Image 1 (cartoon, helix red, strand yellow):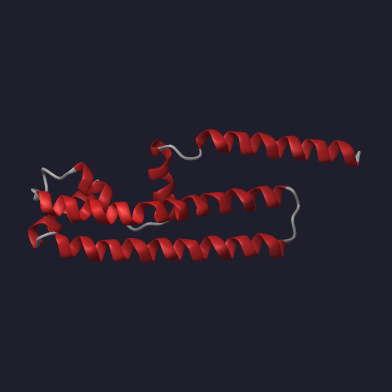
Image 2 (image 1 turned 45 degrees about the horizontal axis):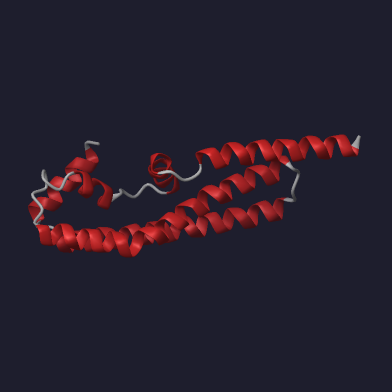
Length: 146
């Protein structure tokens, strides 16, 4: 009976990880993951989609893109770490892992979420330094009305 249970748990874990791998990554899912990982707006993505409406100069676009290039990989890694941690906790719980190991993963996920929010807040401050007051107002209205 133990072997049968172990086989079923292994098969279940494989099926979950296969489904996860099919949906993990890809730009279509990343923004969903980003929104799930933290509530802070994605300023750069809104700017990239609305450069004309915001009346950005080429210099402003270059500054935003430079920030994005310098920070997007780390942000992506942190967001995916949150998603991975949540999957790990779910799988551990279903497999009967002890509470402390699940709580340790939860703490790691929480700490990563705080780092994401810190980074996105620094991004906000940097974006505010690039945009004029009117452009900033337009951007915030776009985000609020999204």
